[in-house]
Structure formats: structure tokens, C-alpha cells
Length: 112
Length: 116
Image (cartoon, rainbow over all chains, first blue to last red; front, side):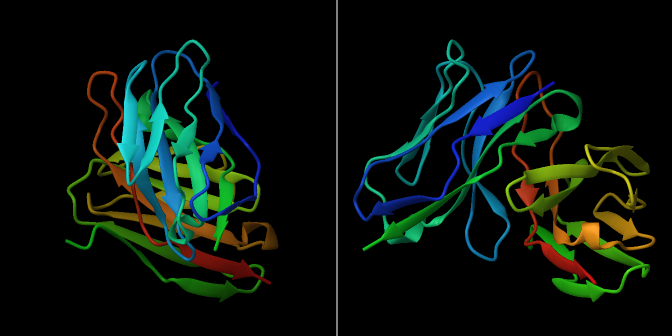
């Protein structure tokens, strides 16, 4: 079956540091890949997505590239801000009813 | 355009009590989902629906029932609450996938449920 593994947190960075959150997946077929973000006390919102191999999703300075050969979709940002503090979820979707399979989430804390 | 809304936002139940969580979406989405979020476990799918009048089990359906009588609403019921159902519940909705591309899911703000 489908599964998503992402690095455990929490990740603590200083403002303007470089961010990488690793995500690897196992899936049959050709899933779409997503990064969702959850700010404190809120629901999940889509951060970026990629639908086929070598696609790069980007939004708000975050990027992730769909790497079929390494089954990975790592999230990166060149310079994080305090406002980026949140929990980040990697997910894959597809198949019956477009169900999503989520990773366990990575908490990011950015300090001044 | 309110997106996905959930009621109530918070609830405390005693073991054995029942309750219904309501999810409503105004985006005319075909698909709707109920998840629970627990620390260290990400989001797990409880039940989902691919259209009005249809429902299906997800990964962790035991102890829950659902109904989709109207396209815009998806109800999650707990008939006899247990402490293991203490969690944050999220509803989501989506368009059907087209070709091989899965569409994003839109999430509600969540319901925090505590069962004592």
C-alpha cells in the first residue's frame, strides 16, 4: 500500500536559515505529491504540489521537486521567517476517491 | 465563499455519550472526507464519500458512522464515545481526480473532542 515517511521534528532554526524537510514515499502507480502546512490552531492548507516526475512545486518561497528515481519530495526554503513556524505534512494522493496518505508531520520552529 | 466549515469547534463528552460532528462545504465538491489527527500519527482517514448518498470506510472507521444526505454536508457520528476517540477531527473536500492527477483537498478548521 501507499506510505509516506518524513523526518521527525521538531526542527528549530534561526531566522534566515536554510530549511530542508525530507519526505520519501512508497506508492503504486503515479501519485500526485503534496506539502500541506498547519499553523497553530488551524486546519491544513495546501502549500504546494507536483503531479508528475520532475515537476517542481513552489509557493511562498518553498519548493519541492518530484523525484521518481529516489521516490522523494523534499521541502526546501532558502531563508525561513518566524512566520513559517508551523507543522508541515507531506502527502501523496491518487487512486480511488483521490484519498491522501499523510506523513506524520514535522514541526518547524523559527526563532529570531 | 466560506469553504469548509465544521461545527462544533470544541466538545467534551463523557464515556458512552453520543454526538454528531457536522461538516459543510460550499464549493460543490463531489468528494468529502473525515480525518482524525493524533500526536505523532499524522492524519488518518476515518470515512469518506464520493457523492451524495454514498460513503466508504477509511483506515480507522471503527466506532464512527457517517452520512451524506446532501452533497454539501458530511456528518460524522460517535454512537458511544470512548476515551480513545479523544482527538482533533478534520473534514475535507475535493473534486474527483481527473486522469492521473489528484486534486488538492480543502480542509476545515477542525473540531477538538475530549472524551473523559
